[in-house]
Amino acid sequence: MVNRAATVFGKGWWLDGLDQLVVSGSGALLVRGNGDTLWYSDNGSGYDKAAGDTQFSTLVENGGGDFTLTSKHGIESNFSSAGLLTSVVDANSNAWDYTYTDGDRDSSSDDISGIEEP
Image (spheres, rainbow, N blue to C red):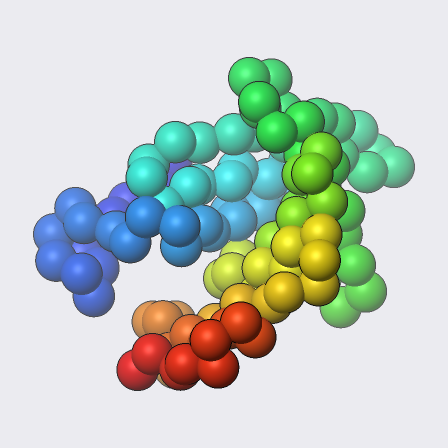
């Protein structure tokens, strides 16, 4: 269970598209920005695909505790060891990067427009 009662966006609010990964000893819960959740069970040698995932994504733990979620379309969502979304890279290598201070999203930028949002 993820408590979003107190967020930087206001009580109960979150930013659509800003996904979060909550890892436990038995698996990882992907919490989508829109509130949808998917459970990836730890099978001892990796993570099983989540039931109900229409993107048929694969979750992999990288070195250092970081994670990569890859969709069937080749879109990679990268998460820090704290479960924060750090970047999204599409199949054409266009990237959106996210930076945080104190666990809050402080800025994002993308390769296409070159615009950085505070």
